[in-house]
Length: 200
Ligand code: OGA
Ligand code: MN
Image (cartoon, rainbow, N blue to C red; front, side, top):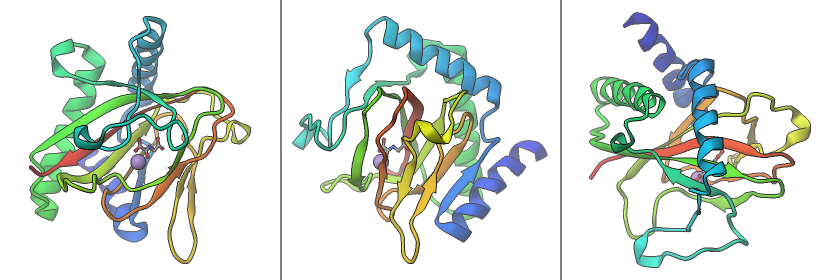
């Protein structure tokens, strides 16, 4: 348990210091590789859907803002790697609720694939008409990422923006209603799992 809490500490400590938590061991490199394989398989089977902007009330596709494609993780898939990811998320939620009284009681995550030339313009993750998304958490699944690939996460912040490389197995964590961010244009296929810890 100690090792597990230590990787949560990375995420929390950097979150408290920089408002954006970063950990390179929230998930293992192996789990990241297995989830990347899942995503490529889903893509090969044409199961990825264009991502919408906003929730059901004002759902629309808008390629000017966002052109990744997604697939929701779900326990009903009985996929060992999705379940391993959920185990880690649930342990992190328990840790957060215990140590920071965050009152998180649900979550949702999807795979996300950005093809060459895709991006996601500046936005906040909380819907305008709903405030249940408390924290955003993204794990990157890009085994061969190099700076020439682009697709960095740009965090808009004073006095200096942060640019975060989407390297394999890295996890970032931030408050959904506070941090404007964008995904810069990617020069190669870019993969991640993105989701939210919610209070409903
Ligand atoms: C999102 C998002 C950031 C990233 O899906 O809302 O901002 O780095 N993703 O993938
Ligand atoms: Mn976002």
